[in-house]
Length: 112
Image (cartoon, rainbow, N blue to C red):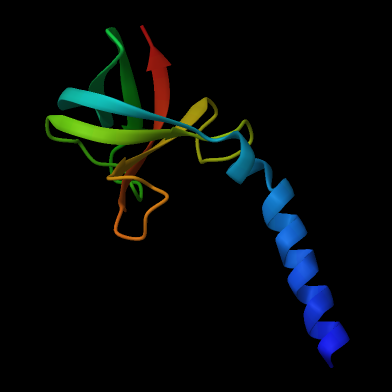
C-alpha cells in the first residue's frame, strides 16, 4: 500500500512540475482606466508600464464583466488555453498565487 501511495504522490508532483500552464504564466499588475460595452462586447481599457491596451470579452458569457477603475493582477495564459482565439488573459483581485485572491474575469488581449 505504501508503494501505491508513493507512486501516486510522485506522479502528481511530476505533473505539477511540468504543467505548461503553471510554468508559462506571466503575471503583471495592471491599472484599469475604465470599461464600456459596445454591441455586446465588453471592452476594458488598461494600462501597464505606460502602455495602453484593451481587454475584450463577449457580454453574457461566464467570467465576462466590465471592471471598475483600479489595480488588478493580469495573468497571461499560454497558447491553447482559454476560451478565445487570441491571447487569453485572466484578471484577479489580489495575487493569484494566494488563497484569498479572486478571479474577476477572463478576457482577450487586444493591443493598440
